[in-house]
Length: 289
Length: 202
Image (cartoon, rainbow over all chains, first blue to last red; front, side, top):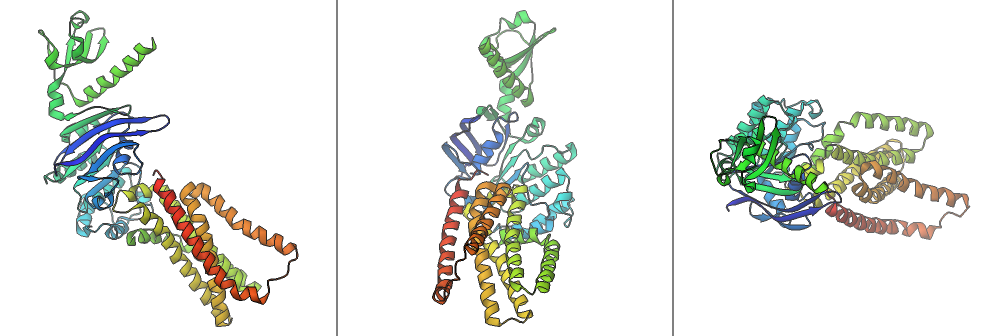
C-alpha cells in the first residue's frame, strides 16, 4: 500500500456551500497539511473521510480501503482528533482508559498512561475541569495509544499556546518516524504546518487550489518586489496575486515564468495562501464592476 | 459495545445521588399511601429517563462524531442505547420486586406487577428512542412527554365513559397480547432507529 489517504472527485452539496470535485492523495509515511480559511471546507472534507456525512459523488480510500464499505475494520488503525468533540465531560483520563480498552482491540493501557505522564494530565481530574490544551492532549494521547497508522487531525493545535503546540508537533514527528505512519492535519496556523509537513493542500471555497509537496511549492513561487512600471512588463501568467502600495508592487509569481533582471525573494506557505485568496477576491470585484 | 455501555453507566453513576434521593422520596410517599404500584411506576419511568439523560450527555460532547471515528458502527451506537435501556429496566425490576416483597405482598402477585411495570417501561422506551435519535434530546423530550400523556389521557377518558372492567376471559389472554405487542414494538422501534441513524449526519 502506498497511499494512506486518497480522495477521487469527491463532492458534497449543501444549500449554501458546496465541496467541489476534491482530489487529493497522501503517500504513506508523509504528513499532509490541509490549509484554508474558516468555512473553506476543511472540516467537511474530514467528515466525509470518516463517513460522518454522506458524499454526493466520488470515492474515498482510507489506508487502501473504501470508506463506505469497510471503514469499521480500518478505524482500528486511525487516530482522530477533532476540535470540538470529545469525551463526555464528567469522565476522567482513567475512565477513558478503561472505556477505550473495551472499544479498541489494540488498545495499549501502558502507552496511554505514559502519554498522560508525558503531557502531565492528572488521571483522576474530571474533563470538565480541563483546560483546552489538556483536552487536546488527552485526545491526542487517545489517538496514539492504539495501532494507529494514520492520524487525522482537525484543527488539533488551534487555541493552544506556542509551547504546547511545539510539544505536540514533536509528538507527531516522533510518530512519523515509522515509515508506514502518515498524518493528515488541517489547521489555519500555517507556521505550524510549515514546520512539519511534506505536502500542503490548499482548499478555497470548497475547491482544491493546489496539493503539492512543500519544497516544490517553495521552489515554484517567489515574492517579486518592483515598481508599478516594471510590474506592467511582467508576463501576466506568472502573477498569482499582487498588492500595490506607495512603494511599488509586491507580487506572488511563478519564478520560471518571470523573464528579466528582477529580484525574487523566498516566499512562505502563508504568503502563498494569502495571495491566492486575495486573487479570487479581486476577480470577484472585477466581475461585479 | 462493552466500552459504550461502560461509558454510559459511568456517565450516569455521577447522578446516582440525585436518583437515590428521588427514590427514597417516592418510597416514603408510597409507604404513607400504602400503594406500592405508585412506587413501581415512578422507579420505572425514572430509569427510562436516565436513558434520555445518557443520550443528552452524548449530544453535549458530540460523542457520536467522536465514537464513529473509532471502531464502532452506527448500528453499535443504536443498539448500545437499547441495551442500556434494558439494563436500567432490569434495575427497576429488581427494585420493584424487592420493594414488593419487603412490603409483605404475595410473591406471585409481586412478580406479576413487577413484570408488568417492566413491560410498560420497555414499551415506553421503544416508543421514544426513534424520536430521540431523529430529533435529539431537546425536542425529543417533549415528544416523549406527549407519548407518555396520550395513553394516560385516553385511560382517563375511557374511565369517565363508565365502561365496565374487562372480563376474566380477556384478562387471561392479556399477558400473551402484551408480550406480542412488546415484541412487535421492539422490532419496529429498532428498525426505525437504525434507519434514522444510518442517514443521520453527525
